[in-house]
Image 1: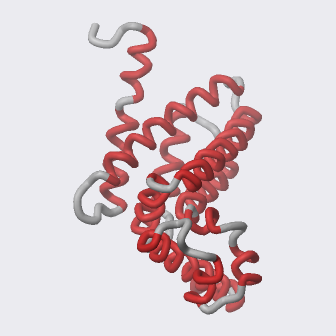
Image 2 (image 1 turned 135 degrees about the horizontal axis):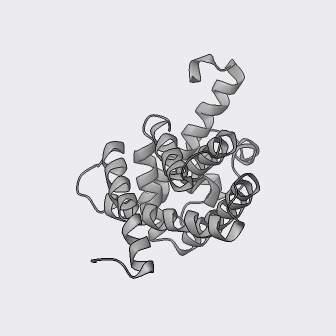
Length: 206
């Protein structure tokens, strides 16, 4: 819990949250390229040194909600025994990670995804991050599971494809869909995965 952290850590967390909130607001209003780092740190009243102790770049802060999710996901996968169906483990860990994100995360995540969708530099950064996370997770899971790395990768990429579809559907909903709506869209997408296996075997519709 945040209140259980030492004072120094709570201050760092509040600074991080202020940087993310302000960055997303400025980037969404003016455009990612139009906002300078000087403008961002001035708005939050911190130094560039403080910024770079927290984030590596403007891209890093703009995609913070996405990176927070996959950092939590990776930590849970590392700590979780890989028993039972592997796809179920991968999916359940994602649901748990989303559920445990901080208050307001889904609002920041949606703003970040909308910004990335219209900003090529952020799209490229997001894809690179996704590739790096995938490589690390696949290597970790394959080292602890009987399936070889190829099959683990294919399974994880299939789950990611369903997740990306769910995000697109969720982001396209009118109003301000919350975390429950994201979970529902993700469950719908995950439920379609067995049908994909049937298509691969040529048994769909039999």
